[in-house]
Structure formats: structure tokens, C-alpha cells
Length: 199
Image (tube, rainbow, N blue to C red; front, top):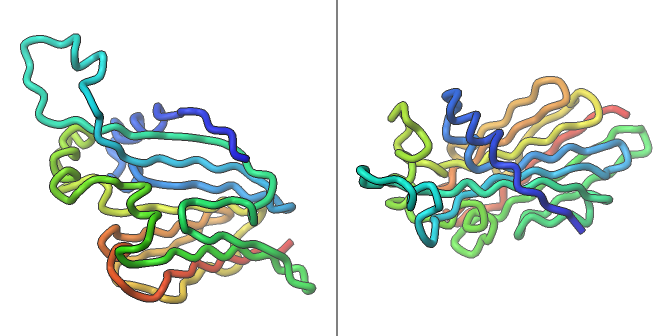
């Protein structure tokens, strides 16, 4: 079981520093050699009612409001970790090459995009004003970013089922996959992300 603790401050500080909107919706896994590790997530939610600070302010009319919900925890085995319907597996070959395989289903029936961004396009466009004071972003939650920190430098980082707008990169032990939300919710083959490293 994963123990969760709310840790929103790093995300909010990232926005204050001018990071792009992909920092709002993300999951980061840190994987150890034995395939235990930690997980951090950030997702969006619409407030059900004005927060205490909003209620305490007078002389202003609020035009935009959104919550960034953050959580952090740990897992004993990568194979036991479930993120909605994202399938995550890992292992080691007899030659000593370790791997992580992450499969993201696509289409209207996929549950993970809605778990991270339960907002309509119009709600995301209105919400961006609350998170991006620069005005450069058009909407928040347009992409979901997955990051995996490996025990050692990535040897391989690739996709099968690559779809328009998906991007991968790796630098040292950190690998990143960015998936546009509209791609995730459009019918198509699953996006399968393969990462390898040498033990």
C-alpha cells in the first residue's frame, strides 16, 4: 500500500518560477535496483467551494480557481503499483539488463487521463489564469508528464504505439515521457514506454 502525504508547495513554486504548465499534471517514480521506490503525483481538481483565503479577501472578484492536488508515497514492489489503468512492469534479463515497461491505454474508456485531469477543455482554459501569471499558457492540464528516475543511467528510452505529440527524453538517470491529453483520450493503440539500464 502507498502512504500519501500532500506536498503541493514544490509545484506551486515551480509555477512561480515560470515553469511550463506540464509541471501541474505529472507522476514521478524513483525506482531502486530491487524495484521498490517512491511515487509522487500532481493532478488538477476544481474547488467545490472557495478556499479560506478566497473567502477572506474583499475588494476583488475571483475569475479563476483550480486546485493542484499533490501526493507522495512509496511502494515495496513496482509490480504492485497501479496508477488508474496504467500498467507498470519491471524486471531483469539474464544478461543483467534491467527494464521498466509502462503501458498507457488510449481512448474514451481510458481512466488515467480523467484521474489526472477531471476538467473539460473550457475549465482548463479558465483555470490557467490561476496558475500562469505570465499569460503564455493557453490551458492547464493539456499534457501529462511521466518521469522515471532509474538506479543508473538509462541505456534505452523508446516508445511503441507512438502518437502525435508524444515526447521522450533522458538525461542520466532521469527519463521523461510527455503525452498530450487529447492523444490520450483519442482511440488508438496503447502507448508503451520502454526504459532499460545496466545493473
